[in-house]
Length: 139
Image (tube, rainbow, N blue to C red; front, side, top):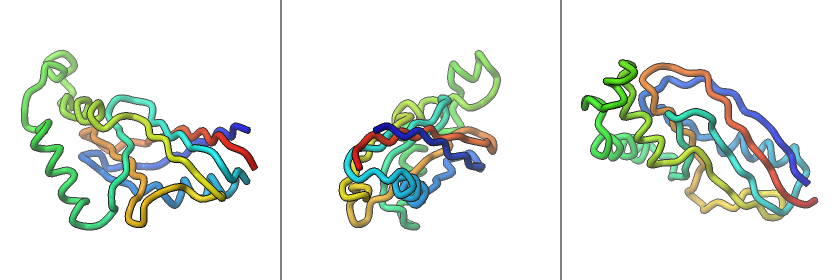
């Protein structure tokens, strides 16, 4: 069985990190499925999905790491083309990726004790985002 859902959220941009684990768990509960996998995807090219331990230290370390890899204050060819100043956001999105797959067993997401699913908005302005969720499994 396949269940399709969407989640909408407002973000602040500039590496806004949202813990979406509770929302994904709620969707799984509502689906009634017990065994399978959940695919989460963000349309667009300035957002990303991954897992981290959602704690204050890593909420600072993660953006700091990204700033070293794709700094905001560098001029990118993208910026010269579109004059929107978010070339770094596109690179960060490409590195992290727009989707994640999380298995579930016995009606619960298979995550480590300190592991949460997060959405990151890398853009240089607040956004209204929509995540597409496909839950594939059996009851």
